[in-house]
Amino acid sequence: NESFDDDDISATSQDIASLKRTLASLQEASKILEEQKRMEEDELKRLQEEEQKKSERQGIIMANRSLCDETNNLGQSSLLKAAKDLLRTSSNDKSVASASTAV
Image 1 (cartoon, helix red, strand yellow):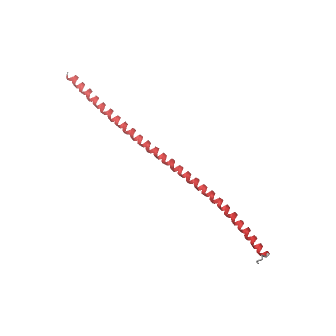
Image 2 (tube, rainbow, N blue to C red):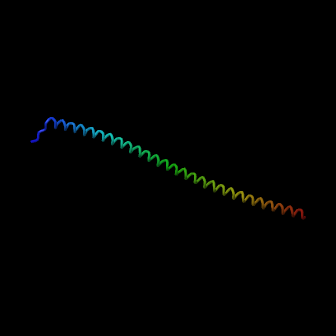
Image 3 (tube, rainbow, N blue to C red):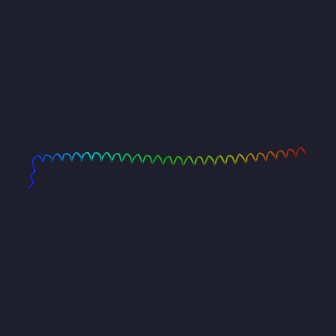
């Protein structure tokens, strides 16, 4: 039969107390790690949202550029047509004026 003396009981009590302290430290570390993980997930989500907004803004900018280009092209076409019409009208006016003077 094994018997425990006071020294064994004291050592065992110290071991138990040490294990309890270790467990408490590990639990605290676990809480800290969980908080860090949550913060990192929040930061990742924020960065993803920023990237999404940036992508949307770039899409809007590209659409605006395209619209400006189309408007500019239409404007140039209208100006070109107006200039041609003006030239045609002025040529007709000169022809009419020449014909009037000839008569």
